Length: 276
Image (spheres, rainbow, N blue to C red):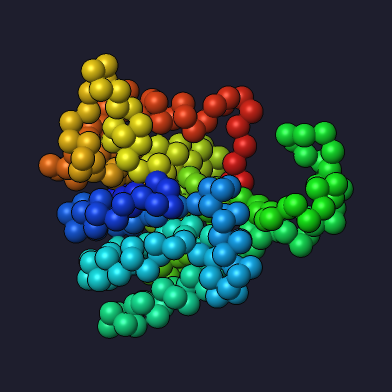
């Protein structure tokens, strides 16, 4: 049975870069995913784009890519990320520029379509959280984004992209896309897509599943937190999954750390919706 290894290089916008370098260098991975976007960060990115039309992507994009692109290019590791934030096209152009400056010939894809601000701005769409509609908020609305699924990212990989950059996508879809691409999963094979989505949820917050979220000193001790290693998901074409990390890195992966992360992500499984 075929397997792929997916490393989680970041779990939020300000995450440290060293664990991603360790994954690329020592993790024997096929894909490296940077999950760096949330509701707050996409709003901040939209503010940045308003000030600079060429901005609005993750502020650590250049530092991250300068650190990992040479290793990934040398080892054939594909990268998938939502560091495009409010401006995936500008992020892709910047990434291509960084690659050229490093002497690398890489194919960079931008996945767009998540920004639905103009479509929503004057609508009567109801709010889930408050009584009223979107239009009643007037100019207080800063951004509106739809969660994209894995299909366009998988398509970019199929078309030969070395780096895939998106804006707002569902977090597990960043990990599901490499699985769909590598194993040619059908987009209506709900069991496999469900298994891949669970795998994505376990991996998406990086150091959370290797003990960062689990640690409670004196109650649930985790060794080596100062150099916490980030997780690797070894995924089989049947949707099976083994979570591990680079040998010798800090933290731990146990059934308990995995259960905490899964509960953190899914909440009520009877009312659980993903774009895929």
